[in-house]
Image (cartoon, rainbow, N blue to C red; front, side, top):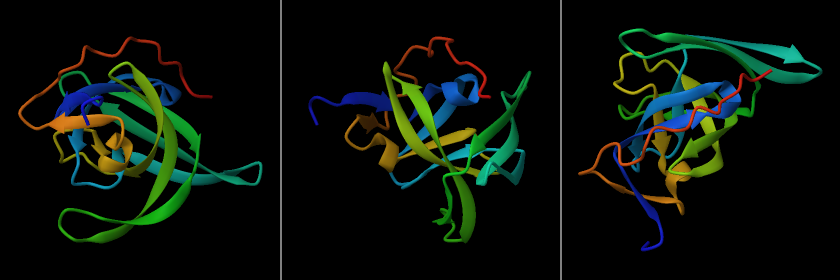
Length: 150
C-alpha cells in the first residue's frame, strides 16, 4: 500500500473518450462498480453491435451538455445503497486521474439527486489508489486534452 497514490474521498477526473475534460467524482471504496450520471439513454444497433446514445449535463451553475455515442459493454444487475436491484447498461471508458490513465467499466444511471455526477468504485481504485476520507481534491485539475468521441 505504501506505493499507492493517496486520494481524497472526492476528486476531479477526466473521461477523454467521452469528451469530458473535467468531472467531479466521489471515490467510494464501499461501492463495487463505478457509475456515471446520464439524463437520457437510448440503446441502438450499429454494424450488428449494441451502442448507447446518451446525454448528460455537468455542472450546477452553468451546466455543460454532453452528447455521447459509445459501444455498450453489457447489461448487469446492480444493487444500490438502499438494497434495490436494477439492470443497468455498462460502458468501458478511459479515466484520467492523478497522472494516470486507465480503463474502467462504468454503469449509466440517473444520479441527478446525488452530489457528484460520477462515483468511482473500488474495482476502479483497487491496486492503483488508496483513499483517505479526511482529504478532498488532492490532485490538480486534469489537463484539458479530451476530444469528442465519434
